[in-house]
Each structure stands twice: as structure tokens, then as C-alpha cells.
Length: 390
Image 1: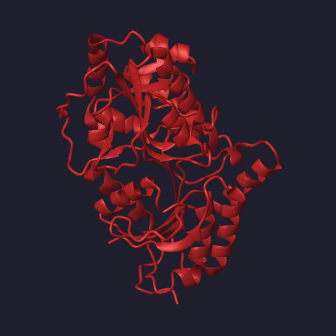
Image 2: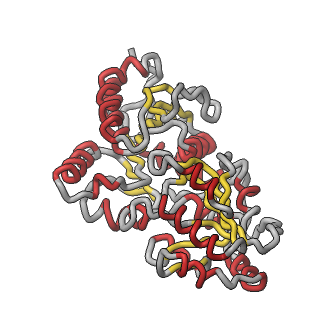
Image 3: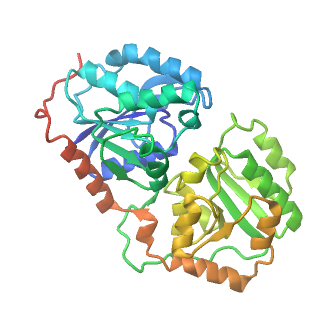
């Protein structure tokens, strides 16, 4: 069985849980080690007890660098007694640095996979800091065996033009995970809520103040014909007044976190539209990403709303689904949605549901294929032994 050491920047990130599920479903044994954004260590992720590397703070880049530097010195003792892994997956740049230090501690040629699902705004700066970070990434990634990323636009706009990583690229989209196989033509029996009011669901990492203000302004203009349902993890480092803002808005409601994949069907089938827009790093990462909510919403029949000039917009346009906005204004939203009625919505939803669910989902076969690709990366190195880190 392939033994994967998964090094992550935030063990409580729901995306980490999804990747662990994929790896284990595909037949891999996983050891999880990482930092946390919680006050106390996380006891359990999918039945795994993470190796706690300490606490870091969201949005505090200098503090995170200091934590990585400190952990690099002690990573050997942190992993003491752990069997040598067959492969190391490093999620994000800071963990790539630790992956190399971890490999040295094991004293073995363990292949490293670099998983990069966001392009941080700091590495795109054209100043000394940005150039230094890109140079650091190129140095750390010089011998990685595989780059895993989630959007073609990350490759086209960053990795290729800046020549950051020479390794082969594996595109693993942010799709919904299906516990059972999905057959072509299979459909969910989705009734959906009545309307009006029309409900727009914004689920996941809630980090975009501009989206929040835009949706608040739009719902006020529509005087109750539209409601916004928010669920997930608000980034209080970006807008510490999130809860007060939402409470003050008559047509916005925050309904807390949810479980993925357990709650996906219920939360998306309770709304008409899904908000697939993010201005957090406008013109850069936010324009290039294909977010989780795009796939999750479409899987369960919620009609996606996106900006036309983004990778998500291009994705939807190619498939002739969704509502695309030419501008990020309340007026543009009103033009696109304000006269919504049941017949038109029915057509929009039918276009989404007409696509094979496999477009939106990974199943057990996809998980097995991913693990097999990782296994092949280990063939060229020395045979696996049961040696442990002293």
C-alpha cells in the first residue's frame, strides 16, 4: 500500500479533508502533518490524528514564515517513530520547504509532489519580495516529481510564463467527491425551494468583502425578491465585522459551517443559484481559479453566477450554462436576474442538469487513478523499507 505523508498549511481546511478522502479511497495509507488555525490541536481528520506542527494565523505571512523556519529545525523529532513514507505531498509553498527538510531527516530519496491550488498575491508582485518568493519557489521545486493544481489558468498565467516548476502537471479540479459511482445520465430528483424569494447561496471560504457588499446592495434594490444564504468559514482576518454586517442586512443570513460531502446535496438544493464569484485577489488568483462551489452547485442543480471575464466564466460559457455578469455592480445583477421568473429559471436549471454528473464529480475510479499515478512516481527510487525516523 502506498504510504503518503501529507504536509499541509492548515489541517482544519475542508479541502485537506477532501484530499485525504481521495487518497484513502484510492488505496493509499496517509499520514497527515501540518499547522493549524485553531487555538488547540485538531484531534481527528477522517480518523487520522494529525501530527501537530503548531499554530499559524490567516493573513499573517511573516508569522507563518517564522513558524515554518522554527519547525524546519524540529521536524525530525516531530515525526520521530513514523515509518518512512513512499511519497511526500506538500500543500502550498511553505510546506514545500518543510517537505525537503523532512526528506533530509528521513535520509532517503522520497519523491515530493507539490500541490498548489492557489497563487498567492505576494508571489505575483513585481518588486523585490515577489521576485524573491518566485526564486525561492523555483529553487524548492527544482526536483519535485509532479505539480498538482486545480485550474488550467494557473498553468497558463503563472507556472508556464514564470517557469516555476519543470515537473509534469496533474490537473485535479475542485470537484465534488461521490462515494458511489455516478452513471452517465443519472440525475438527482431535485424539487428545490419555491420562489420568490429567489435564493442565492454563497458557500465555502467567505473571504471577499466586495462580494458581500455587492450582494447586500442588490438584495436591498430588489426589496426582498432575492435572499442570500451564506454558509462556511468567514475569513475574519479580511472582514472582522462579518457577523455584524450580515446581521444588519435584512436579506442576508449566515447559517454556519457545513460538512463536505455529507451536507452538499441539502444546502445546494435549498437555493436556486450559487455564487461562483470571488474578488479577493482580483485580476490574479480570483480570476484564474475554478472554485469548489462551481462544481458542488452544478452537481446539485444550483445555477452558477460568475463574472464573464474569468476562468469560471469561460468554463460556463463553453458549456452554455449559468448567469454571466459583464460588470460587478448591483445594476448588472438586477439586469441579469431582476426579472427572473419560474419558466426562465427552469430553463437555466435544466441546462445545468443536462450535463453528465461526472463533469462535476470525482468517484472511486478517479481516486484510484490518482493514487496509481503517485505510485508510479516511486518506481525509480530505492525499494521501500520499513525503516523509521530515529
